[in-house]
Amino acid sequence: MTETSASTLKERRKAWAWIPSLYFAEGIPYVLVMTVSVVMYKRLDISNADIALYTSWLYLPWVIKPLWSPIVDLFGTKRAWITGMQLLVGAALAGVAFTIPMDAFFQWSLAALWLVAFSSATHDIAADGFYMLAMDDANQSWFVGIRSTFYRLAMITGQGLLVVLAGWLEVRQESVQAAWATTFGIVAAGFLLLMAWHRFLLPRPALDGPTAQASGAAILSEFMATFVSFFRKPKIGVILAFLLLYRFAEAQLAKMAAPFLLDPVDAGGLALSTAQVGFVYGTVGVLALTFGGILGGIVVARKGLKYWLWWMAVAINVPNAVYIFLSWSVPASLLVVNAAVAVEQFGYGFGFTAYMMYMIYVADGPHKTAHFALCTGFMALGMMLPGMVSGWVQETLGYNLFFVYVLLATIPGFLVTAFIPLRASFGRGEQGHGVS
Image (cartoon, rainbow, N blue to C red; front, side, top):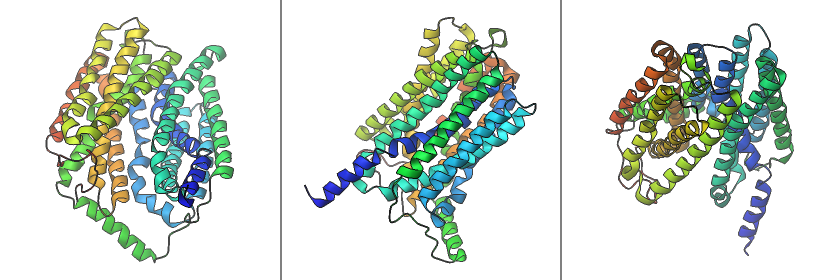
């Protein structure tokens, strides 16, 4: 065994102490802000229009994070940013717990959730940068699947187990407000424990330090050059349209799926309990989403993105029709509801592979890290803007017609997919030479 391979194996053994927990900690705040908050506000009798509008605003830190990501590189260590943001997330989650019993809980809890969102987006930047600094190339590749697995486990924990816990507490405590305050208090305490864990167990890479060596003017100039080069890519208008519209329908469906499952039958919903929604959407749905994503990655690696692009566009859009079936038939069987949600989420996972791979294709070039961050900003914007109006549209049309509208809203995604630049060989054993 060579000295290099021995060092790699030693580093790998140590990494098991922090990589799973780091990416679990990355996933929890996101799923709380984007998904669990929708369920909570629905149970606290906030209207669908207000839920969709105000929780969609919580996407904003992820939309604009490319604008402040250089700050994380330039000042302080990634390690310090990680633990600092985890402390802030834990404190903000405690703030949500404390504000829920207040009279003006909606405004105050939204402010606390916005702080969670900002801290989480910053934490994402630091965690991904730290991963690359703390691991050699071999171990970075080896742990890619581990990262993804624990991020998915965070989704199951948030959308599934925590929602089930809140539902159980609603029954036990006979108070919806007390149940959700307790749930967020538990999560806050758990997150602060994660921060303490990382404070002691994250390694201290020699390369992890501030990179602010040049003058402020030079740094700004480099940042602007990187930014401008992204918008000079060939067919950038079509590319941006794809990033914004590929999930146009899914962005609206995602905001109204949980309220639909929770609303009483006389309001057009399925009248599921909070715990049932946690199981259906947060456990069965997330598992189907994960399997769809895994399959998508496998098939793209074999025949390339160009070959599978239209199949994936169909997969992310057409299964939305299951909600038309659910809203018009109102099945009493929980098995039928689980199967329908699983079909839709599997299609979403499979179809989303095309989106992620295309962002890699677009970002490739001299500034691939910064350009990929810009792509993710447009990805978040593509979820934020349609999501904001989805509640108003649903209240105007009712659930039956809203889900018909969602199926029609897939048309823009199909149209832009037809015009994007894409090399036929991309994804089939190589990922270089994208749009530049």
